[in-house]
Length: 112
Length: 113
Image (cartoon, rainbow over all chains, first blue to last red):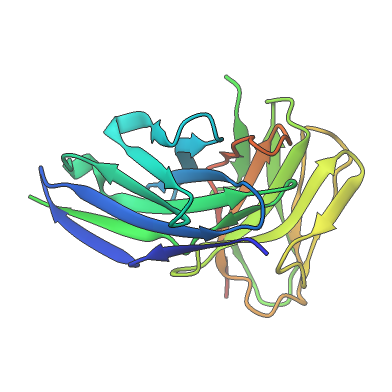
């Protein structure tokens, strides 16, 4: 069965600091992996997705993620945090069909 | 503009009443989904539909019902059998391919009093 684990329900960084949000997945077949962002009381927006074309995936708003098969990880990074990055971030995996499995989410706080 | 629309944004109902949440998409997507979001639990799949007139239970279908009579529409009914219906409900759609990303509506916050 597929699963997604996001390490840390809350992450706090200073403005301008590196953002690192961790995601590990479990899948018996090559996965399609996604990162979504959610602002308060809104739906989810796609940040980026991995579909086996390249292990380093660049997304919107300066975010990127690297697929590491040996570590079954797909961590999200951004070199320099901005106040507007404060939101909740979800890692998700989709394999073999129509279902997408979401992690529990990581809330990012950005301090001035 | 193409997109997925949920209505209403906020909904209040008395305990014991059924309530229907609307979800409409004009993206020509085959697949549609309903998720429930509770704090600290991520998104949990309630029902999904791959094609018109067909739908499958997700992980937490008890106390919910859906229909898919039109490709564009996938309404969710929260019945009185749902023990804890107060939550944020998200509707999504996708092309249906494995690599397809999901497009989400803005959500409906249901409060049962």
